Image (cartoon, rainbow, N blue to C red):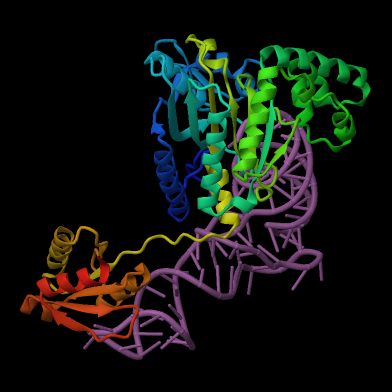
Length: 424
RNA sequence: GUGAGCGUAGCUCAGUUGGCAGAGCCCCGGAUUGUGGAUCCGGCCGUCGCGGGUUCAAAUCCCGUCGCUCACCCCA
C-alpha cells in the first residue's frame, strides 16, 4: 500500500468507476460546443515559460511559485501549462487565426500547478476552456454565460450553481482603483492580517477576496470598483446584465470578485457552488482584451472561461447522480477441448455481424460454474454457452441471466437474429 | 510554505488498562462432476505506513519520519 511505487502527489489516477462521469460530461460538452458553433483547438501541454509569465503576471502565485518549469536538453526554459488561455492565444497569433476575423474555440486537457492538494484542487487537473477572440462584447460575453448555463441545465445542476458577476474596467480604471484601494487599506494598516499586508504591495485587489472574517467590515466599507469604471465598461456591464435578465439567468453582482490572473480586464464572472467545501468555483472567466497584444499579436479583444473538470465531477457525485459502468450485452461461456477456440471465433462472428453488440469472452481455464458466475457478475443480460454438446452439433446455447426464460439451443445464424432483436 | 486530523487484510472499519492482530465485504472451494444469483459450511488474505525509544511485553505510550485528507494561501 504505502510501499513500492505510487503516483506522485496531486496527480491522480482516474479509475473506471469515475471515468463514466467524465465521459458523460465530455459527451455533453462536445454536443454543446457544436451547437454554438465553437471548434476545438489543441495547443501543446508544454510552452516556453514566457508564454505564461508574460500573460498570467509575474506577481501572481501561479507564476511566482506554482509552475512546473524546467530546462530541456537545449537549455530552453519550458513550462507545463498552468492554464489554457495563454497557449491558445499564442497559437492564434502564430497561425494568424484571428486575422481580421472573429474566432471561437474550445479545448480540454490537463493543467499543472505545484500547489498543496486539497478537495477540488490537484497538481494535475483538467480544464475545459472556451475562448472567443475578435469580439468586443457584451453580446459574446452573454453568449458564453448562456452556454455555461445551458451546460448546468443539461447536467441537472442549475440549482446548485450561482453566477457571480463583476467588471474590472479597462487598464486605466484598474490602475486608478488599485491606488485608491491601496490608500484605503494603508489608512487601516493595523487592522490588516499578515497576508493582506503582503498583498498590499503585490495585488491590493486581492484583499477584497480574503476569507478572513475579521476583515469583513473593513472590506465591506472599502471603495467599490463600480464607482471607478470607465464609460465603456460600465455600459457593457449594464447591457450584459439586461441580457442575462432577459434570458432569466440569475446573477449576483459582486464587486469583490477579482480573479487571480493579471490578464483579466472588463467583465469577469464565476459560477460557484456550496457543495465542494472551500473550492467552490466550478467555472470562471472573463475578458482579456489586452492579452493578445501582450503576447505579441495585434490588439484583439477576447473573452473566455474555464471549467474545472474534477470539480464538476465532484458536484455530480455530490448530487448522487449515478452512472453505472456499461455492462456487456452477452458473455461467452465455453468449456471442453475446443471451447476456447470456438468461443473466440463466435465472439468475432458476432462482432462482424452485430457491430453495436458488446461481447465479453471468458478467458483461461476456469470451470463451467466459475464461468457462469463471471457471466453473472459482468452484468451481461445473456450468456452464450459453448460446451461439448453445442460444439459437437455446431450450435450455441442461449441463457438469459436476468429474466425467467428457458435456455435454448440455436444455430449461430439464429443466435445472431435473436441478439439483433434484443440489442439493436 | 503554514495548520489540523488520519495511516490496522484488496475495500470499509473494530481492536478495552500495554498481554496470542479481528469482523464484514471481496476472492477461492464445497454442499450441487454442464448451469450463475439466495442460503449454509470451509479456506486464502497482514512490514498494524516506516525508523527508533520505553517496557518482561507495543497496533496501543514517547520521539522522529513518510504518506493521505481537509483547511490557509491561491485558483478551475
